Length: 209
Length: 243
Image (tube, rainbow over all chains, first blue to last red):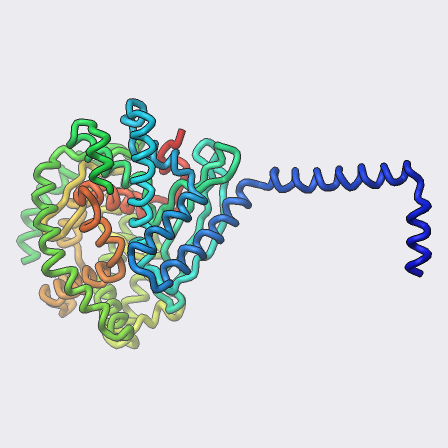
């Protein structure tokens, strides 16, 4: 039977061959476009699942606080829109800061936030992160509503993951725990530091490191 | 002590509350009104000192207790708050949580062994907390200015008035419940230690890892309070602009 099929294939007409090849490339193109056009809200949920499980496993790893911070920093760089995060946290001074200062601040604030997130998740050991739903809030980005559920029946902690889809790909910008946004809180703290140093961005960067 | 407090505090409070009632919640921005920051910073340094020598070590000790003991102590402390919760839910026009609070304190104080066991919770009557600050919010009062109270911690002018009214309205005192002021104070202390213990790492991050712990505590507390008074879910308006 195999020989017969092979025989038939060899005798296939050139037009048919061309047709099959075209069909195959169109199908591939449609499939790849399907990936690019995936619903950003679905993407945000998938990233939340992925990132939260990575964070939980790095928190539960036996590493030191510094190793955990460095690992979380890598996660932020991979999944976060850190230039947006840095700009929002620095506030109005971002516009007058030099490109070098912006880059140095982004680097410093990424490590600083990684340390904060390690602390934040440090208390939630053993809890599972359950996604309730996700919503496209337009200009404000995409919000994934999740909660950390304590298997021992303790309090459930609300945890909203905020994404931006502004650049075309869906990127993490904030985690809001029980209504407390990391972005808003650190923007206030950084604003105060800048006030204290009369807007000295280099002093701010030194303070965060 | 609560009887003279009623006589002294109410005539002062009623006009203050009426004034605050005029301050509408509409157009409340994400900004924080903090006109007495220098005074608040003094309270903050006192509170931070108290945390490092008293509350934090107590919370560490609490978390080392067996899980069952922690839960029992927490339940007993929160049980004593139910009657006042029932009063406030009633004032807010929230019938279901008011009745739930009454059912909870009745069940848990008797079959639940003086509140040590949350029997009502196991039966599906869940705990929800409230206070007179929330009652004022439900009546349309704005949050007012940020205040950090010595010992009691972050608050607003509205919520500070709320705390005073709560002290006066507490049915445990008004109804001769047999629960002494000392016992109520102990329950509040257990509640504070339990919360500090539950939030050990996040609160450590705010108080000891932030370049300005006053601002970090203020931002975190105000956001959490607004979220607690909201409809329970983060909305687009709560989020700061990215672009």
